[in-house]
Length: 161
Image 1 (cartoon, rainbow, N blue to C red):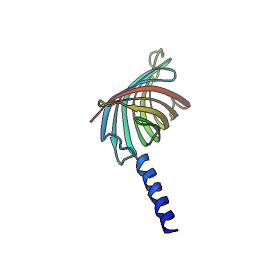
Image 2 (cartoon, helix red, strand yellow; image 1 turned 120 degrees about the horizontal axis):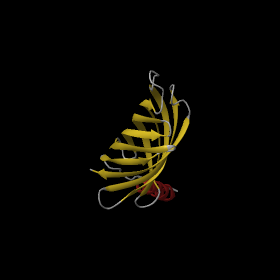
Image 3 (cartoon, one colour; image 1 turned 90 degrees about the horizontal axis):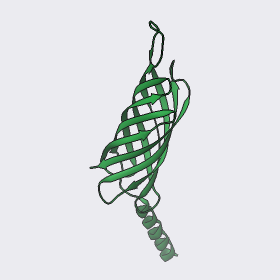
Image 4 (cartoon, rainbow, N blue to C red; image 1 turned 180 degrees about the vertical axis):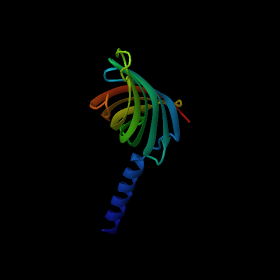
């Protein structure tokens, strides 16, 4: 019975250690995409633990009736799919400064809003220090101009160090 327990414990610990895959300490790059126009972010990721990280984005978004400058922060959990493929989920929030297009002279054309965001995506970690990702970020805005749900889909390219 002791041998069976020891073998089971060894197999279990091997399974746990084989699932743990360290993520890069730092990664910086671009995140390009949007749901209703075009958006670009400078993205910075910092690893906290083997499978947790923070992602910060500072970017610009051009919608049909507005343009915006945004800052977003996310806490992400990273899980391995295959050898160099990972999937990740996250939650976070941010702040945005919006400017409306085509307003009459004298009307207020700017607004600031907050947003809550979720995040889910996949990424591939190349043998070189390049990380490519495709993610989906639903965002709910709290403000005068942006007070609805947006579905942001983007491609990310980051240099890892």
